[in-house]
Amino acid sequence: MKTFFGSLLGSFLGAIIGLVIIFFIIVGIFAGLVKAIKTKDVQHINANTVLEIKLDHAIAERTAENPLNFDFDDNSPTRETAGLNDIIACIRNAATDSKIKGIYLNLGDIPAGISSIETIRKELKDFKTTSGKFIIAYGIGYSQKSYYLASVADKVYLYPEGEIMLKGLSVELMFYKKAFDKLGIQIQVFRHGRFKSFVEPYILDKMSPDNKVQLRGLLTSLWGNMLSDIADSRHLTVGAIDQMADSLSISSAEEALRYKLVDSLLYPDQVKAKLRNDGVATAGKMEGEPNVVGLDEYRRSFSIYKSNPKKIALIYANGDIIQGEGDDETIGSARIARAIREARLDADVKAIVLRVNSPGGDGIASDIIWREVVLAKKEKPVVVSMGDYAASGGYYISCAASEIVAEPTTITGSIGVFGLLPNAKSLLEDKLGITTDTVSTNTHSSAPSLSYPLESKEAMVLQHAIEDFYHTFLTRVSEGRNMTVANVDSIGQGRVWSGAQAIKIGLVDTLGSLKVAMRIAAKKANLVDYSVEELPRQMNPFHKFLSNFGAQTSETFLKDKLGAAYKPVEAMEKIQDTKGVQARMPYDITIQ
Image (cartoon, rainbow, N blue to C red; front, side):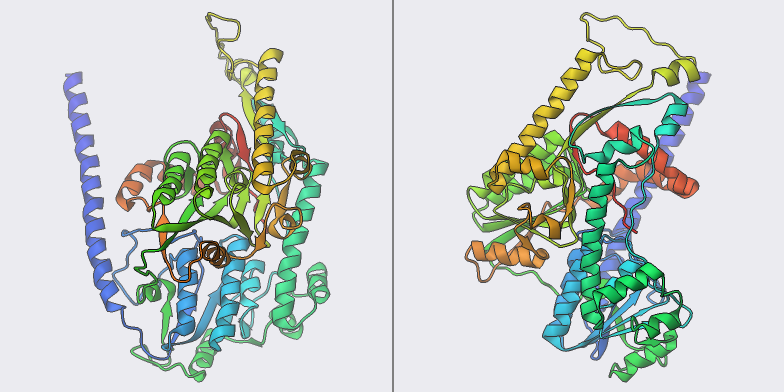
């Protein structure tokens, strides 16, 4: 009877799961049809239209293929999903589109890295220079990053009761040592690099002096670049803006106006009136509404793809570096190596641009990708374009390129390696009353283990592996950058650098965006006209959704329920993921 009910329950659950999967497939197919229909509806852009840029979403390197993201009601507010590639494409196309009269930056907080925002800002600046069209920025309130972007506009408007959070940059780290001590968990650390501080939250209760030195230098460089750009656009001095941040002078909208950070204090209806007065006609909208088009909608109205047989392969390497296939949010060594190899063997591909946005990860996986870059460079130019991060393993896979391009605000370097191994003996025995026993054929057969600390011989072997891989890392950079190993070591040691700092010490060749990297690659390949092939091809959205559904759901649930308390849980997950030698940035740097 128990077997019968067990089988019945299993069949019932299987049927339910099957129905859920079928439901999502049907929804996906229907969404694709809706998307196709809506795409036809938006092919035509009316005259006197304004391109509205919100940037209220996390900005990926390229727009994800997501047919489940659709909306039945065209009048309902929607969240844009455009990736950095499509944002840039829209701005660039709008510059020559006679139907687009200008750009409206409708800004709040922007959940993106400073380098991504800098790339968009540069494109907007080029838009103004080449097109002569207007850019208007408006915000109920501006974070530092959103104001940095807004400052490029011809006119910057602020809500009368809004504010600008101008206070300088900071990094706040959370340390878990005392919590682990209470739990009875000891983190055994193996590393090379005095600045390789990924391990610090697990073994210290505050930042080391070396860590503070590198972070202060990094933040000073990033802040200086932001101040310089804002001062240039707003016709102010760097010193004046820095003093505003130091003194917290901008505590109200009136003070922002008085210090010339904004041009006017306006309500939303007044901003719409400004748009109308700039010659933007109402066309098929509610009375008094300007005719605007969002990024997603506008991107479907034009094509940037050419059929030229001569190609530049644009390869996206985005996320943590892991062994295996990975996905669109992680750099799987097999998948990225295959993409580079495909581009190398394709006779129509004349150059490769590797777009790296990664804090690093698995050392062996990084080396696998590095090898393919070396092979590709022997046959055609390989130019690296660095995004928000290209650090540790991210720099490892970049160092062999023909040329490296980074934004001034890119976080790079972090040439160093480490390994982590938890010892949970006290937790198991003293806290939980769990003991372990082993039977082995050799002295060290059970090493490494979570249930006892490493013996000195075992620890020595692991540290030797770290030292050996660090030397390999130094050698890779030395060969790729034409520097001595000693020179690389002196700027290595796990230290992170901004792009502006990195160019001075030889880790980067040119400061600029992906556009600059593409231009360099074309020049090296003697290309005047070419098409762009994006690799690796994005994953099937249905397969991606179904394969990640459980993990994403549990992670989202924990984040929603735990809030800031999710950080320790995330920290433990990272320890579990750091198997083997790691070439990873010191930590996830969140700059506020």
